[in-house]
Amino acid sequence: MKIIADTHTHTVASTHAYSTLLENVTYAKKIGLRILGNTDHGPAIAGGPQVWYFHNEVAFPEVIDGVIVLKGAEANILDYDGNLDLTQNELNKLDWVIASMHSPVINSGTVEDHTRAYLAVAQNPAVDVIGHSGDGRFPYDYERVIKAFKEYGKIVEINNHSFVTRAGSKENCTQIAKLCKKYQVPVVVNSDAHFCTEIGHFPHCIAMLEEIDFPEELVVNADFDRFLAIVKEKSGRDFTQEITPW
Image (cartoon, rainbow, N blue to C red; front, side):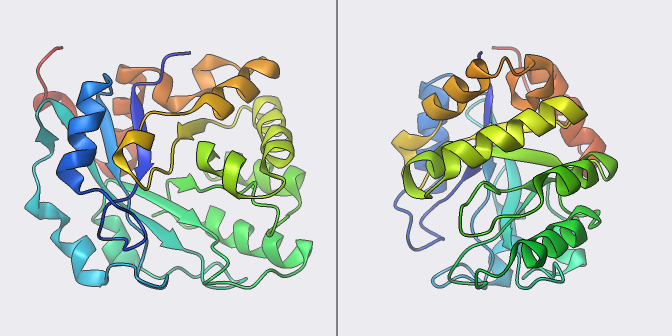
């Protein structure tokens, strides 16, 4: 499976990451990626950039050295009601919005607590992607929630970083991916890179998806034209006018 985009990456603006945006773009170009998501953490996480950072993503071009750069965020889920650390107005101005649970921001609760949070996030029209939900610290009712992700048009992230840093993620992500296959819920394969050389590195994700014979047509970043159509549908931005063929 060939992946043409990595839509979950961090820069030095998230102070636990180590590369600049330009370093990320340069590396993405080097390995042949056509699209990069700039998705630094929302302001609720320790060391995360403040709100003005996301307002000012207009400062960088939509295409840098032939690579489309999505102006995005990894918003933090703050509570079991599904509130996020960026406002609807702020999120609506971005190309690509991931919503994730992080232990420094939200405490682990019960399965029902996490289920309620994800069901609320599913109904948020500004959220495009559910980030690394296979995290063993935040188990939820997978069957019930994946159906809701389908109903509300969410993309489920398969996060390579989780396989090596979040306990139980391989088993949980496998179960989640099987349900996405069953209910025809699209997924996106991402690195969650915190250093530029992690970008485009998805071996654990790809191996797991191949093990369960996951359909490539449900992997949104496995096809360039399909991915751009999804971005246009979600953000209203038509990047086809900004690019030249490789």
